View 1 (tube, one colour):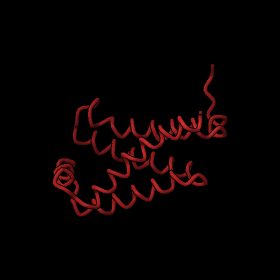
View 2 (tube, rainbow, N blue to C red):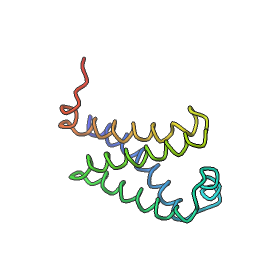
View 3 (cartoon, helix red, strand yellow):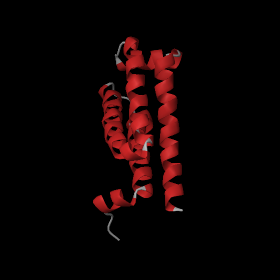
Length: 123
């Protein structure tokens, strides 16, 4: 049961990240507008999408899932910093990368018993 719950939590994060990475590659109008708002050239979008998808691949492979979670944390931290830099409202789009990161680590912690012993939660 624990592995299933962790898998569902992780799947939510993976589905969002796959969608996000794919739209960075395709560059539809909302991505172009978002890059303009953030002050980044849209030419960076495909590279960012490839990096994001590579991080997701590391995360979904059981042997490299912890490494994937670590690099996704860095990726999502950069996304959060970009949102803060332009002054987007804190509790809407700015903290969304934080929420995704919590799903990444929460799902991994629930499904991987060894990780739970590394970062024990007290009762």
